Image 1 (cartoon, one colour):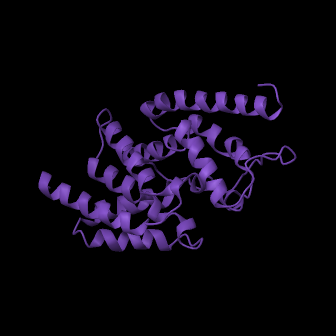
Image 2: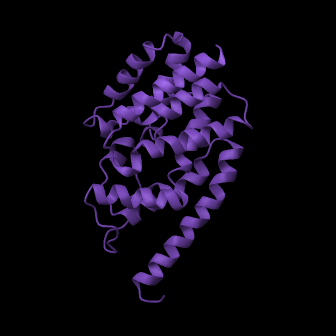
Image 3: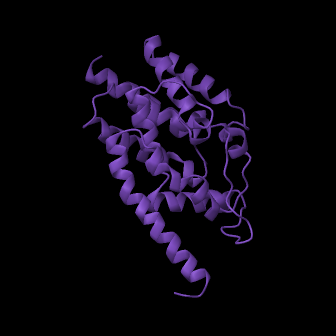
Length: 220
């Protein structure tokens, strides 16, 4: 594939994603996609991988998210598959991208026992990095507000989910989400680069929570 052909496919995919996510909640909008895409591309600079598969998967990963498809797990992957077939990419690349976006979410990881290609690992790490740190905190409260959830209730303890179905049904306050997902992500990174980047973001969240509790209890 020539550089020109590569750029044209990425441009067409970008337009498709922007159209599909128009009006999306700010934690899962185009800017989230762009950050994941940029992070994934920067990781490919130091990790040998198929760049096209990484780029397409990063751009398309939230199209497969069931919460944008009425809870249906199949609509998103089918939509992505149909779109990719219009690009005249070979079946191997199309299936690789659909496989990644179908299985890379945190919810899916509860029940997923399949293989993770290096492209899968990079895109999953990039998406998880955007869920932690300063931006991760902003996204968590944005989504909690969007869903009408309280940001904290000291009488509601965090849950210990053991399946994707249980996690999907969560209506926990946003602070609980830190313990149910965000603080777990550092140890779930796949690549050394992902782990390195996650360390600083994780510590930032730990400091935020300490400050939050100090202010809640009138200590600061």
